[in-house]
Length: 366
Image: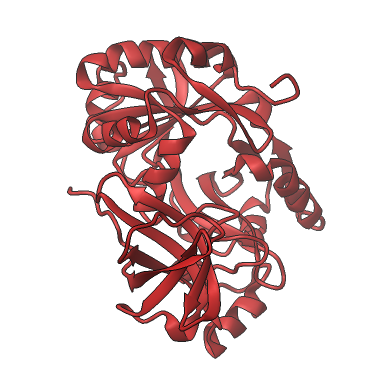
């Protein structure tokens, strides 16, 4: 673990029973009490995640909006101040550089929140493509930390420790002046679990204090510390993509079923021509949802077959804790993607029956 990057919370994980793994070069907890317990806590009460490994990149300047429009697939021009946008950055051929959240504070001030495994690559990509634009790009990742509080009781718990009226922060909006236990934070109504909740950005020196005090405050409501394992099962059930699984430099947003976040009516953006061509001509493979019809848990990378023909591979697969079913996502040839299509997943060299289903595995009850 010596060579791994660590968040300021690293020394606290052991207190809560954290089991540490190497995640994209970071020493992070995969679980505390157990993945299923933690998963269920978020679905029924609330969970607290240390997501300080995520990257934050600032784009400021007279042409900040114009540059962000060039960089991303979604349309930042329609955002209000303090509104947040889910989007992707693509290569010219349409593959994904990364998926990210873009915060618009003003026409000249944006914050991009990127995946931990891609921070350096993304920063270099953004700087390289900023040439010719009147903007300044700064990697703020080392000077910002982040917690996520997610679940049906998240608002109730957080409201007790802030005077900001959280009900007034709409979904995918942010407030930069929120005081939590007296510490100034940026709070957004966003998350990666399929539940209501907030992502909280603070200075590194405030992270341990906020983590400990939030857990104490929420203890009576069932608030639990949550590791990477449950973070993945939660996002998977909610059909939220993971970079390196459902999207990558080799998998485009159109293939991944994320076409809604690709605004081809925009004047221009990197990758537009390739993605437009894909949309018009159709793709040869797509990410689909599936359910196992026989015993067996699908895992990332397992091969998918149809009548002895290999047609793709599993991008993510689990025994869903909420649905108690073996389900997965897979990238397969388009001709086999109709709902109800019988396919086979190769598990330990044996082909096991499955069928394609809607990717909307879990939808939160409002």
